[in-house]
Image 1 (cartoon, rainbow, N blue to C red):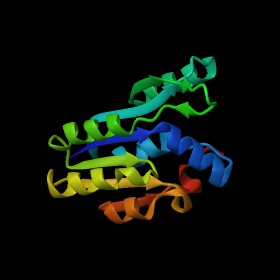
Image 2: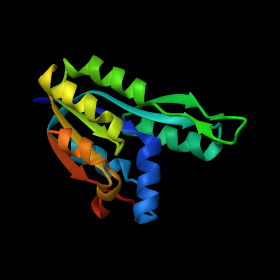
Image 3: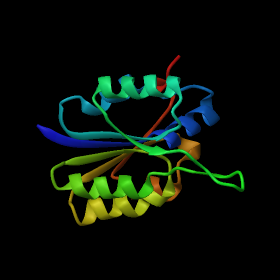
Image 4: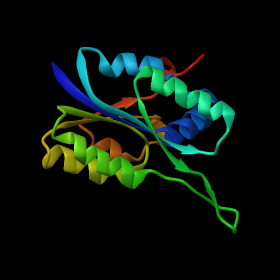
Length: 158
């Protein structure tokens, strides 16, 4: 059976789906699609923790689906900007689990991950499937992936 590691950039998928479709990503449909006939090695959802009760409920839903939820605190800078990205954590986990996986699934449109996709394919000899909102996913990431799956209405909540 094919093995798969799933890495979800929660903030990226939330904002790109909201921006493009004014709808939310359907994690249950995504899980069913991406795990069908596959053994899950690891599934991690990377999120920002603001302490909000609704957010905690969402994180519990992710855990119930099968994700490990990794949280970073939301940091508001004095200049009004905010910090809270998981690029390095996602990259490190991608490399760590690649040798145990036939496929790494990355849910993000962030072009910074094109180097990760290239490294996983060339050095670790695994497939990289990228799920992203088409018009908001970096071309470099799409081109680096073994396969790109567009997030469209079939992967959105009604």
